[in-house]
Amino acid sequence: MSKNLKIGIVGVGTIGTMHAEAFRALGLADVQAICDVDRRKLASKGDKFGVKQRFADYRDLLKTPVEAVCICVPNAAHKQVAIASLKAGKHVFLEKPMAINAAQARQIAQAAARCRRVIQIGMVNRQAAAAQLLRRLIEEGQLGDIYHMRATLIRHRGVPGLGGWFTTKAQSGGGPMIDLGVHWFDLCMWLSGNWKPTAVSAKTYSKFGCKMGDYKYVSMWAGPPDYRGVCDVEDYSTGFVRFGAKATMSFEIAWAANTRDDAFIEILGDKGGARIMHGKPLTVLTEHNGRLADITPQFDDRVNIFEEQARKFVAACRGKMPPAATARQGVVVMKLIDAIYASSRGNREVAIQA
Image (cartoon, rainbow, N blue to C red; front, side, top):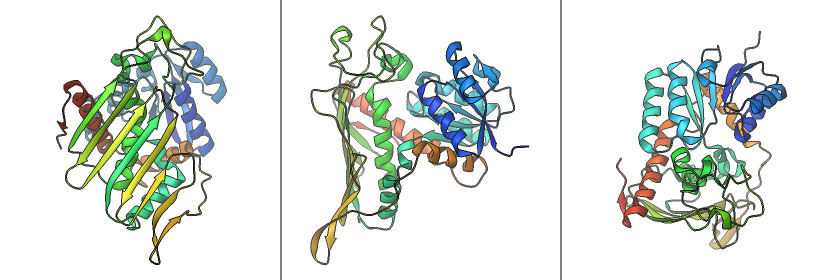
């Protein structure tokens, strides 16, 4: 009898399928049940992965003997499905964002603690080889005292699923801040070790997606657009975050803007700086033997980040390591995003409570 972790997947759209493929490739976990409200998708993905237990209601899946649940549903359903899964005695892998706001995220974290079950948040970019190496370099003191971070992820035209749940605030919780910023903020704090944001001054804008019929694009993730639907979320945001007197972070996150695509995270320390997640080799800008030096570390970057994330989740469920991205960290990210939206609404700096 297989000793692999028995997993159920709730939501077998694009991201759910990617997780199913990762668990299958891993060889340490078996997808034994799937759930989706779209019965055609349920049938096709069930056939693809050879899963016989197929459900339209996640509560029926929770009655099966799966040990863990991978949750890949629209953001507004995260709290409900995650807490029900935990109460059913299942470990939980929860796709990002943890919830649509910090209050819901805290409720999920509290439920995990009460139920004594593992919960891991889907911050997959942490598993990139460059990110793993840079974190080690920072922990070893190679960059010195980290005092500033820059988080930039801009798409010229990248509004996903226009008119669908991505652009409907009641279902998503927000626009690119919730969809993309959550990854970049998590990475900045995880890399630097700065997990106590104290204040933020930010502004969000809705300039493109809200004019649904006039939105011009080349391709669309989660498309095609539904012009009968809703777009009531931001498509651009920028701001400045304080981490007490210790450090700061500037950010620019956008689904759509009249500028070129750009993506990077930059970490600045008094001994060195580095930029990652920009499609180029990791380079550390520092000094060596009394001279300025750009160092490009050599390392094996052949890692499938989804498989590595899945491997760590299985290990956490088996008690071999802590979750790769914890509920506590997920709550911090959501508190920051809540404060960004509040700052934009009030046109002022907003304090972030510990």
